[in-house]
Amino acid sequence: MDLEPVIGLEVHLQLKTCTKLFCSCPVVFAASPNTQTCPICLGLPGSLPVVNRQAVELALKLALALKCRINTISGFDRKNYFYPDLPKGYQITQHYVPLASNGFVEINSANGETKRIRILRLHIEEDAGKIIYTEGTRDALVDFNRCGVPLVEIVSGADFRSPQEAYDYLVEIRKIARYLDISDADMEKGHLRCDVNISLRPKGTELFGTRTEIKNLNSFAGVRNALECEIERQKKILEACGRIEQETLAYDAVSRRMIVQRSKEEAHDYRYFPEPDLRPLVLNDEIINKVEREVVELPTVRQNRFVKDYGLPPKKAEILCSQKALADYFEECAASAPSQSVADWLITETLRVANERKFSIKDLYVEPKRMAELIALLETGKITNIVAKRVYEKMISENRTPSEIIEREGLVVERTEDKLTEMAKEVLKENEVAVRDYKKGKKTAIKHLLGSLMKKSKGRADPKIAEKILEQLLKE
Image 1: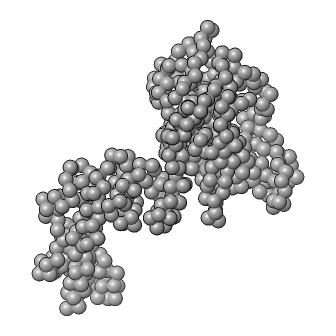
Image 2 (image 1 turned 90 degrees about the horizontal axis):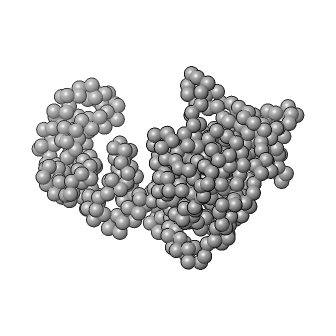
Image 3 (image 1 turned 60 degrees about the vertical axis):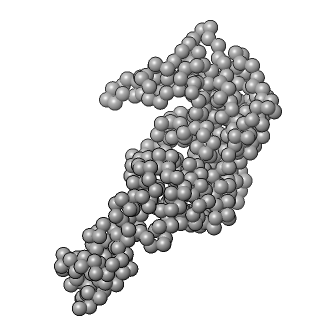
């Protein structure tokens, strides 16, 4: 059979609030175990939850950005299950009437076209604690700090037909969350978690096969790899005329195999019922309009605008729009300098420095007019590319213009042929092997010699004049 995968994702996104969803305990990453708790998030008798307004507004902002239909009256419900990291014995969530539904996210499919992924529902819920298994023992420790941390769950339609599409969707969700500043969406810190549902069916049919669920995936690549592994596993079973069991699985990345955790629960297994300690969540027009004004232009929309308005290649536009701060800075600089030149500089140099120094884009902020001056000096040939890089790094740490740094350091491009000829002769003496290679017909050897000359001149030599002088000397 020619089988195709049918994949749906459930994404849990930790909201960027100061306090928990139903109490005033602070949300602190990596705090000492069990130090950020109170009677409310531990569910002690007599404690009553109070809804965090900031969490509701952040979830609403995401729902509006994803073009969801907002339920002006929604409610909270209890999801009952017993597990060591759930001290109350239930989780407060939104089961019967979620905050929002019927939205969508657009991703770029493999053939270059835009594909729309449905958002079936988006709801608010509290997080559970964390179980820590101690290596080499049979002990398990429980940290309740995470209990009650606000999450938004985004349930997609079963619209993915490949692991790569699921990967691209997760990348887009993370970008949107960061653009809206509702979550850091850092998978390593548990801010973004994903469960996947997958089944296989013959291509061309509309029926769904028996699905399995994969939990506890801790990276985007892990999601893609787990899906690829499960597709192969299900294919082998179906091709051998076997039957897929509805199960919850875990992916072992080391052995690249699926591990059965338990039979899949159905909704009735959780015995949902309305949360008796919380009134319905009512959103009026004033709240919705206030939050709607805070929704910024989303990354995919902005990316398409960069292609249209600035004439950028789609790949460059995608890189620039991967971070809101980078896209904002590009537009500031493009108002004073050619957009193509700005894009090239930010992609090659600004991102390089950010990665090397582990800085954010905001840490590398240089006044746009000064950036435009640096680019103009480079493009008019007044400085070389090597010098431009050196000047840029000094501009980051010093409150000086490019011209001031160039004058102070004596970095104006060297075009005097006598000086360049003298340096070129020294380079030829120091690189006899490259000289022999060039004279034997290996013309690429001149690139090595030119690099040595640029290094000797501290990047100041005009590359065109320098190469011409080297060629003349090599003919003698």
